[in-house]
Length: 273
Image 1: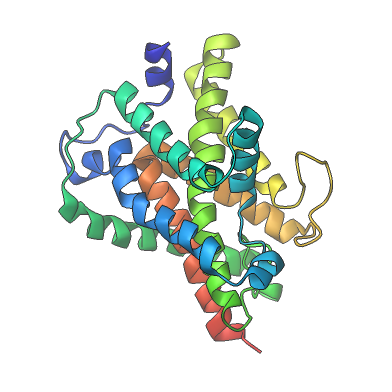
Image 2: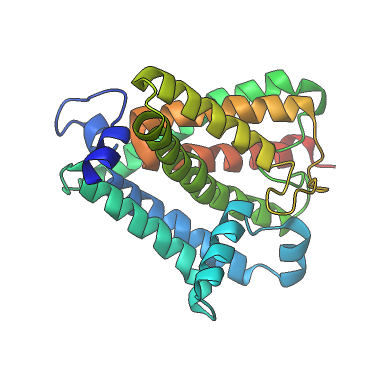
């Protein structure tokens, strides 16, 4: 089983051993790099005013799904608040183990990783402006507009950071790897067809989940369907999937988080009424 997981989670490109690109694609790097993001999200959702919390839906849907699943398994109380973060860490460490990659970490790589994530977020900013130029004030990854005064602005940033972690965990790390095992190991599809199908299915579900609550089947009244936003999210899902396959989970989640942060700040600065 470990061999199957390893075969389906290999990256598309093989970088030189111990190079920056190879090191920072390791799952253990994702744990270290994303830990401040996880702490920021957890503290943000705890200390932001409760009224603002309920109005802006700071709890990311993917986070709530994970929390509900853990509650179903029997977890509860204060531990339930920390459990999703622990799940992220455990999954990434397990992913690191089956990958067979080195556990060595060079902490000087953290700053270049941040710069890389910011640069990789820029194409999505440009794409969102191009596809949605008539109503660019909408932040695609957050259900409410970001052009509101603080502390709502902070709530939007917290939400974006959480989306970067938990949406990438479910829609890229878990879903794509599961789909690859289904298409390759169960249905017997070829590798290239399996990758293409996994990317497209995950991207379509990623786009749809912003508008539809999969558990209840109801439309998300806070983010009504719009073709420009839906197309953007599918394209962003493909972009994140390819990024995940090439650069690993840490860079992908960081890029998603920084896109949300940059988009929120741009909306607030340029379109605040």
